[in-house]
Image (cartoon, rainbow, N blue to C red; front, side):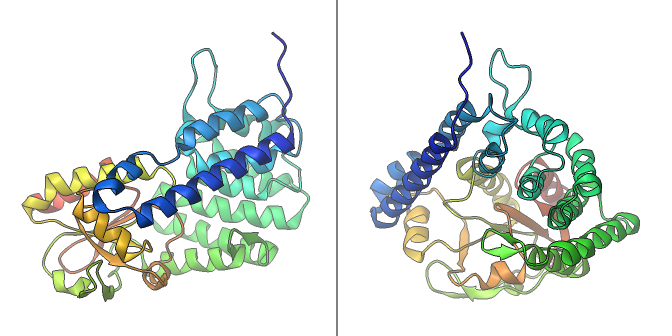
Amino acid sequence: MLSRAGTPEAASQIKKEYEGAVQDWARKLGVADPEAQLNVWKNRPKPSVYGSRMWMELKDSLRDDWTIEYCVWILERAPVFAVSTDPGEAQSCAQSIIQFLQRVHLKSPKVGMLCLALTSQSDPAILKVIEAVEKENPHEEVQGQASLAIAMLLKGLGDDAAIMTRRIDHLRRAIIKAHEVKVGDTTVSKLAMDEIFVIQNLTKGRTAPDVIGRDSAGEPFKLSMLKGRVTVLAFWHTSMRDAERGLGLLRKLYEQQGKRGMNLIGVTSDSREVLRSLRANGTIPWRNFSDLNGRIHSEYRVRDLPLVYVLDGERKIRYIGGPGAFVDLTVEGMLAQ
């Protein structure tokens, strides 16, 4: 059967449908009572369904510049789908995107955001491809976006002095070359400055800021009240990508380690009404800061969700990253001491 080339109009419609479905779901979640809310929660729009539809529009047209924008959309909205491989396919959606970036779009003026979107993937080939974009792309703003992406990817290689120096060098290049380029509701310059702040203040061994605010019940609360205890500070939101999996990992950690003395404290900009309902029906059993104005997120320079900080009894940072095995192992080791 002959393949069918996709169109930007069809891709735009899929994007619009997904965003509308998520907005409708969030509205229902906010007004449902605790019993109905559990059912609403289980029926959130599935990014993989929309990601699969989007990929059908893109995969035979990846040589065309218009697909770059929607490749970014898949990587950002459906990251689990992006790395999965369908039966009969030789490679994943993400691998195909990386391949076409390297072979066809290396010098395109549109690939800056694609470089940044690829930082959510764990494929070791990505760093070399983005380094090639930084070196060979003739557009200074794209070079700057690639520099920012490289700095973010280097974060996963450790925190020794040489890597930190490389990261800061790339962040400075990003600020110089692409400082006014928009990334969502912020800019390359702001993201790069935040990354430099994180390197200087929020890396392993540093003392985490003492979060002060109110929990979902409206009670005053601060992190320093947990002095002497292992604490996991988890930033999340009901509408974050892959929310069901991320919150499932946190719930498993809470159930396994909470009884051993670990504190799991959430930070979210969801409304207190939503938080109270989700806690009442057992979906979110841990205590949460209600960060409606984003002050705590800003203090910790949080960009991607979910994000977890593991802190010792003196609020020293022992781990930063997504929920999962590394968080579990860090907490297990600290509790065993």
